Image (cartoon, rainbow, N blue to C red; front, side):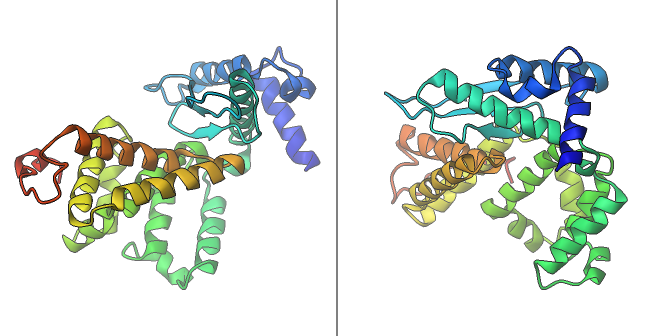
Length: 282
């Protein structure tokens, strides 16, 4: 722990040279510090050059406790885990969680190396029924994970997280199963989706999939949304990275909005959900 704290202080001294490392997490102006950290990162290494800097979102609420989310360049998302009595306090708490994770992301142990890949694959094997031999077979889950890690050699875990979130959503959405049924190899799927970022177009495609699921099983959207909201709250209170749960919420909310704003799609017995609308999405 002492070595980790020393490493964090060293990182702070490098990225925020005019800040006192001993006072960083006690500074009430942690919001500006987080912004400054990522601006410095982008200037130094052009990290996530196509992304904005830091984006905050406060959930509407008539009174406390208040909830705030902060999204970092690349898409990683964090929220306040404490019970906050003001929006400003919630914003600061979310910024503090994000800053701590941003600093930890700079540690050498958070970068994907050969040693990191070996340890990660061994941990994955230990938690499943697979074997180390599976790591060389991309048709297995262990092999696909190994391939993804090797394809992202040198990246940090926050950089790798965006690709992982895409595949978590594709698995949750049922798209990976559908792709396997078309005989696409895991390598082909990984190579294809590695070229794309998680944007509005991808969310819209997934929302259309959930509209079709709702037509087949009425009520599934509301059920999934309740689960996603519960998972998001539990993860936020635990101080975890939130993007997967937040994206689930956004996709399901988008699907519900489209259903109830379109008279044709909101009628359970109506089969007029145009196939043309899905053309190009699958």
